[in-house]
Image (cartoon, rainbow, N blue to C red; front, side, top):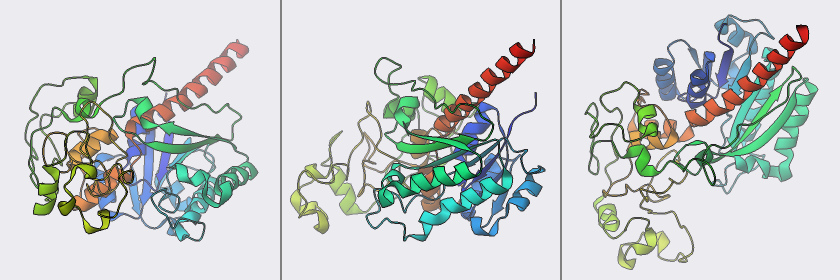
Length: 377
């Protein structure tokens, strides 16, 4: 049986593509405007054609030509339109932000490509912006194109990812099949959550501003998560941390495991935080709990904005550690500057989550095919 086909829009470094590839899909093309992410995507998805261009400049016919398909032949269209306009971290969010209209470009592609299925991912803030009109518009417009659509908010930690991350997934099809979302595998009554140390405990030790690129792991894999991440690799890639200022080093010395900015002496606090309430900014200057979950991995892993301090060392988590917390295999080498690498990791859909969404769709199709076969018999 030939592999099912996919195209990934707003693909970034390719987290969603990787998840669908792991599930058995052949991802034929990816599109994004980020050149550094494009290099990462092309080198980690050598069988896929990367198109570097704004989505407004890419036509459905061009994608079909690159993929070698005709309209209606594509199995699934993937994509996560840039979400900053909807994010709870963006206090100026609104429909006036030009990025809020990029989902319309995605709809244009659905109309032109006519995939059997589509998956669109975004931040949960999209449900509240403009009183929910974005969600209503997505369902309404796709309905006009003949697609049934459902959405659900998935929690990354419930699918074996060591991170608290909430994302909304829209799944739809035009072939009359039921739409099912993956069932959680981790949590109360299920497998225990994967902890931060489960994810990064085998990586070489580095100091503030240090790197351990191409150095061997310090232990054999200690659990199934590390075995998944490492695969056949023997050495580490992208294991570099940013060089933080002396004042930040001094601040971190006062922060215990699980602590935050509230543990920093007043005279060392950033000026903007000296007026903050003790109940505010609970994640800022947070030191990770090795037995806990990471906060949401953002595009900077900046200790000023979140709990990105290593559990035992006075430094920010490295690019590779952030990638581990996102569920990327260690075979992924991120290209570009260190800043660009963090952006690629933070913007991505965790591949493990993508894989489970893909598997839920495949299982639905398999059940349908078995019913057809049994009725024909």
